[in-house]
Amino acid sequence: MIDVHYWPTPNGWKVTVMLEECGLDYNIVPVDIGGGDQFKAGFLRISPNNRMPAIVDHDPLGGGEPIAIFESGAILEYLADKTGRFLSQDPRERYRVLQWVHWQMANLGPMMGNANHFKNYGKNIADDPAQLEYGIKRFVGEVDRLAGVMDAQLSSNAYLAGSDYTIADIISWPWARLMGRLIDEAMWDTFPDLKRWVDEVGERSAVDKGWQVGRDMGKRDLSEAEEQARRDLLFNQTNEKVRKAREEAARTAS
Image (cartoon, rainbow, N blue to C red):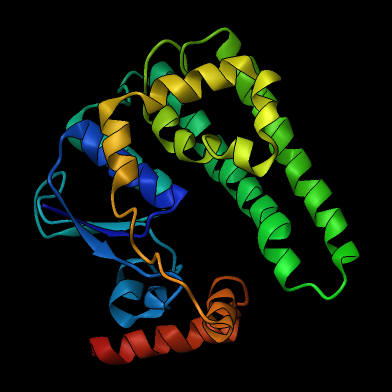
């Protein structure tokens, strides 16, 4: 059994989609990132960067004691190796896939996260909307560029890493499907091959099932004070806050 420390976000969906694709049994452990669960001692022992998702595999690859893994890219690579699916062992094929996995982790996810912050969250907290203009232009523009990178790749390939469906597609799809909402739905006319891929991957039954996991988590109306506290947890983290959380985790572990 695999425990999945999870919240329904694009990064969380990567793992549940992969688990569904692999047919592995798993147990969802909710990590309410708006309520501060990511700073709890038990979770920090699993994910020292205080970010979900993370997994604990109680029947790990290679046997032995349970293994904890954080970072979605590492989790998908581990699950692929555990099951022998969606990531070739042939060096050329393997690294053709892994370069797109790392591309997603370094580019698509962070750029879309920053664009969403400035475009959607920033407008609620900035006293001067003009201060947001540069951030919106910079990061939404970068998402547009990345859409072009994907569209060009998919114009001559069925999937991101070539002719086979791999973890490169699984890790990228949860973010890519939200591009229209972030930029403009009309963008799909500019990127038809990207749209074709988003639709085709989304039609896979395992993808749909993984995306639906925990869809109702955290769906409730928040007061203004609760919403401000949530924003502080998500966007105003400092070294001091993280240090104190780590010290508390160490105390409770001793």
